Length: 277
Image (cartoon, rainbow, N blue to C red; front, top):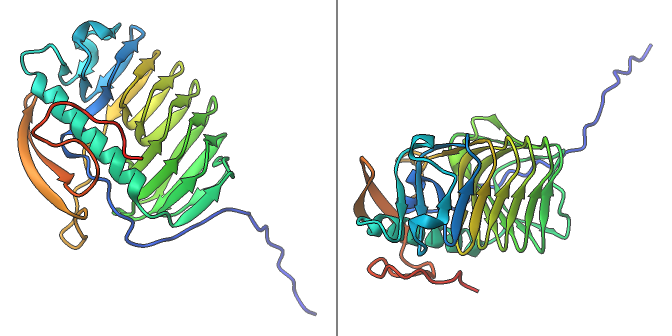
């Protein structure tokens, strides 16, 4: 008698590309929040990492007390305003780099990421992207995930970006062409690099960091942890076209590593340019 063993085929998108470029964060890797216009927070928000606002002044940071921030708060009108300027500058360079990478997966108008399992790759969306439910990112310690989103990123309430295998939050990057909205009680993993603004609902947890280059970051009660750059093993190639410079942020002496051949503002100039088109 022939024995048939039933099985369930789970339809998932599992893409495994190799040697995805790493996004160079420079000094911005030490910041949980970086914004251009304003930062507002409900009392009770917890920030693990530094906070920077540039070119606006400290009065544009509202509802965020020093005791809520495990790090320093830096703005344009501080005596050490160069810290905020360089962090914002390095964030712009990171945004430009993430936007410039050649895509390995063209998503087009297929905007829904929820319910999928994805491997390392550069995923390009022609317009918006959304996450409903769970998105699983699976990979090794040094696998990089880059999402290039032409317009908006919206995550639904209770959604989650879950890491499987040895994948790390410091290797996940969301380049958003306009603004990002994170639904209440959701969990975002990776660094969100938005050209304009980021709004997070109640009880949102972010494991990576938030950057709103020209607009505001608006938070409610929740938790944002800034994840420093991954320790790049000597067996891995460094970011393309890199140079180094140093500065001091809060009580941490760090090294800024950035891509000198990616469009963006010069390190010597505190003025931050717009993203490359």
